[in-house]
Image (cartoon, rainbow, N blue to C red; front, side, top):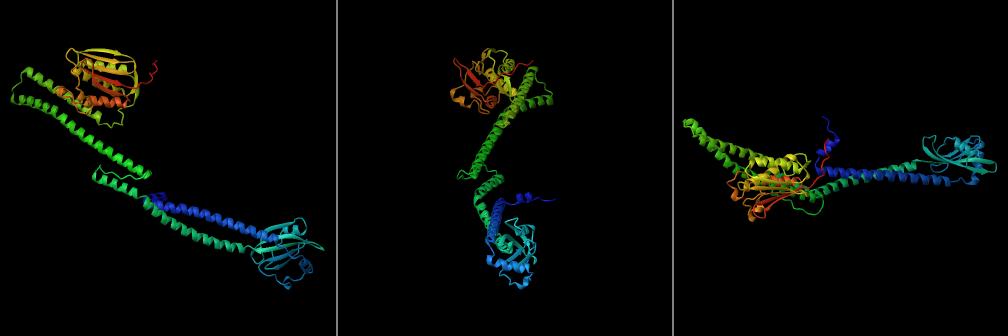
Length: 469
């Protein structure tokens, strides 16, 4: 399998990656600066050389002698060579040329045009007969017999050698800079990643020991400090969640123990009756079967409540919809009447639409009504009012709730001492509070004027859905 370069880079430790990326960034910057320096220097040197060539002129008094030698066909070797590596070449209008200096250079049409007076001057690069590259400047020179072209040629190797030396110097300096940048980048990475190392050690400690009490010291306001705060908040939330989970399991075990013990006792009594052949009296058997059925129903309700409360608070039970609170309340009232047939329900329901999950909202309303049914005296009245501002009030005329117990009514598995003998698990009002909060509302229980308890629910309204055709 072929490993891509990006994959190799990811496989490196973070420090190495930071140092490598720093060195690469510096290398690119130095390379760009060196290249710019090299090209600018070369352009400047070439410009100065061309300017020097344009300012170079053959002394006027020497021109006639050179021209006579060229016209007369004097051998170039018989003329004293000019000093240095420069070349001077006389170009006649006939195309003949005489070269003095390093090496003859070819005559180009532009040079001939200058000798004939068509151009004032010309500048170009040519290769001399000895293979050396020359920069040639040709200009007009007048004398008594007419006009000739004078070419001054200078080797380009002067600049090439200087630029080669500069290139080596820049390469050396760039290499030293890249190596230094890599070392500095590695040092900065080690110093800058020390807080990350502490965070990594803490995470590894939590993973190995499951100790959620670990906290990382937070210093400053940078990204690492924010990450440390987030980690501390996460571990605190996990610790709180684990404590709540442990408490929920303990409370659930305690609540399940009572119906399970009673159910086991009743089942063992029925089994012993079958094994011994001693039939129970019909009334006792019916009462025993009714007790078993009630206990199984209580267990099923308790398990359903536990499933409802086991979901995280941030997870909604289902998609939110715009529903009529008054319509769901009517359905919940029908179910409540079946559970309290001897009670009288006085209702006043105004239309009110909310955004909620229908099944969860109905379950919460049923729990509120069941609570009112449970504590209402026989033949009592339950008053249900849904005002036009969306305030739902459910009032019973029971014994009421003492003031010292009101702060605990929405706690899981909490039950009033006066309600220990009544059926229920202590989870109903917890589910009500959870559902109402998920819908953006509030719920509260308070003593009612004249006795009893009033449950007040407020849910934010939503636009009524258009009528269906």
